[in-house]
Picture 1: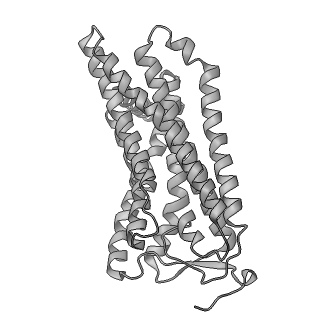
Picture 2 (picture 1 turned 45 degrees about the vertical axis):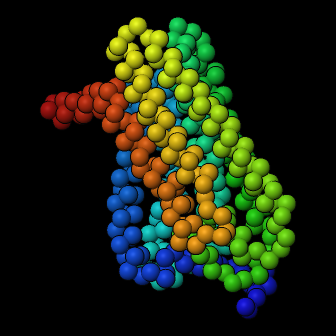
Length: 309
């Protein structure tokens, strides 16, 4: 295999599903539809921002999650559509760095946000009387800021470390976007210490929030003690929504295939958490939420009244 020196690698080639050109054409249409539907997160952002009654911690967490999902899709989807629409898509060295950075940034932030949202539901359902004190504005702000800062730290450390390695070629990334594992395959240096760091970081980032998710199972047991049938149904519906989103995101993110798996399998596993989660979150949190529906109808009615006058 012909090797290039580090200075000659100024751009990368994203292969996508180039071995299956017919599949690429079909996937382009599917992912384009997914991207357009994912923009539905922007509707959540608008509704929560404009409706004063939703300016409580539960929905403000959801607003932050929607911002992350919209941004996550914007980082991945446009470049992915280019890869699927061309036989050979190129990405500059700086572009590859930037995409990996923001993938890690928004992905890490979402991990911590989902954990914070689970804690919020735990406090609201298990301690309803003291909930306003437990989840006051100060605590809410600290959880949100911690989530975003944690995402920045993860992205800064990991991306800087990856691109400090020499890339000796070939410059072909056998993937749909600039994700850490396929980029590391192009490195011609000992990455043992980085692998230890990456493994430890992944365990902490996934395990710590997942422990908070386990608290939601405690919530389910607490629901049985509620005297109100309506309260039990509402609480169970809320918990089911959060659990669905959490398990899907953490589950697919934590079982990313190892190097022994086929490259196409790795690509599909990456797509499962990077695309489907932003697609499903609006459906899970909004269409099944009566308060969000009422807020949407109120804003729509307000718009109709303005046009009437």
